[in-house]
Amino acid sequence: MTLYGDSLPDFPWDSLAPAKERASAHGLIDLSIGTPVDPTPEIAQRALIAAADAPGYPTTIGTSELREAIVSWWARRRGASHLSADNVLPTIGSKEMVALLPALLGLGKGDVIVHPATAYPTYDVGARLAGATPHPSDGGPETWPAATRLVWVNSPGNPHGHVLAVEELRGILRVARERGIIVASDECYAELAMAEPYLSAGVPSILADEVCGADASGLLALYSLSKQSNLAGYRAAFISGDRGLIARLTHIRKHAGFLVPAPVQHAMSAVLRDDAHVEAQRETYRRRRELLAPAIENAGLAIDPDCVAGLYLWARRPEAEPTERASLDLVNEFADRGILVAPGSFYGAAGFGFVRIALSASDEQLATAVERLR
Image 1 (cartoon, rainbow, N blue to C red):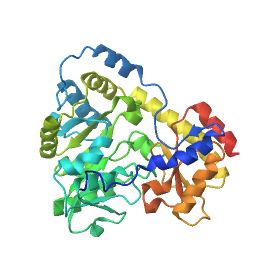
Image 2: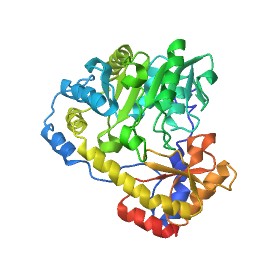
Image 3: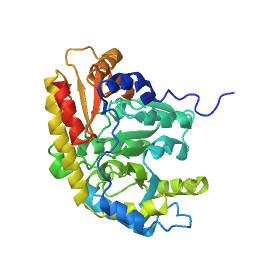
Image 4: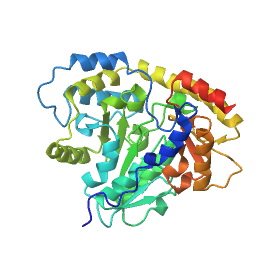
């Protein structure tokens, strides 16, 4: 008997156990996972405490306070002024939605789901869970298979920090609408631009007025407060876009009991209205990047020049062949200095030769890592 999930690959990070043990012998500095280490903002903690008396069930759709905060955030921070409360839905973190979205949309056998060639593994997993076919590709819309029903966009990209420009997003959207394909845009690192022009102008969104023409038809965008607000432990995120698709997701999630806890909803409302803590956190990561990047380059690695946003440095030895072995060798080189990084092979064959190095460590740990890399 075939059981649900039998087709899934092994969980990638489990395979890092030997490298972690190797690094631990030298005093572990874990730069393999983008887990926030800075304090949760006080504004979130106060809001959580204020709403702690929550004996009843929360609603799937979210409180009116939260939905209004999400709509206001989209207009203020992401240039999407056309959304209303019917266009948004809170989720239990963003990863569960990435994994379940194809199934919730009714996709399955015979359907193709396109995702970036260098990608967060959960896009592939979500397609497999639904019984659909994952199709990694960095080609343009002309390369999408005929059976494509869903296209994932990830900008800024995890792991490599690439950003899609307005014209690129418009091109994807145009073809998707011509062919009746849903576009799901994972934008969880959008507030963490590290270089111009995105520091000043912001990272473009699929839902921005200038991209979609103030029309969310066929579009969904995912966002998480884990990185910008250090709320990973709260599991605080939301999905926004096409009103009909949001209604479908809401209906199914009511039956399944996917409910964001009421105190978390109140905390989300508070942080979405406060931009100051986000800008401070982005500056913290930018400062850490400026500390670590030269050390990585001085150690003989080349950082991808298009790595301009997000929590990671995407680096490789320029003289090495782009193989899975090259990624694993680099992981071991770092481990011998007590530093754990993630091999690019976790993110598909297009990541061979690379390693992903997280900026989510304390200033003291990163200073120690820089010293070790010398």
